[in-house]
Length: 134
Image (cartoon, rainbow, N blue to C red; front, side, top):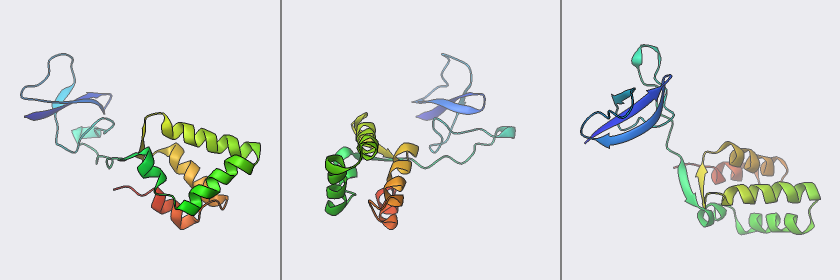
């Protein structure tokens, strides 16, 4: 089975696996396994290095990356923090629940966890551990 990618303006927008080249729309090219949506074709036709696959975690697995003490601090913020802290933490929790899973890297999640570290809610080295991929 071959892999085919459809490119629009130099960006891979679709990938299919089938024996023959798709004929449903123009722009399909045979691609390697590391090429996927969002990969850019450089001038001259070379494919830019594919971004690493995101790490997908269940909500529970993501929250278990926080220590029990860190989770307790977050719960305490919801109970006794300022309204701005409560709003930010509730927005973060809502964002995490939208898909039913968490994908890292994600700019909003990264910014939020780093903001927790900057505010002293979690230690800076822990932010890196929480956001680790792979």
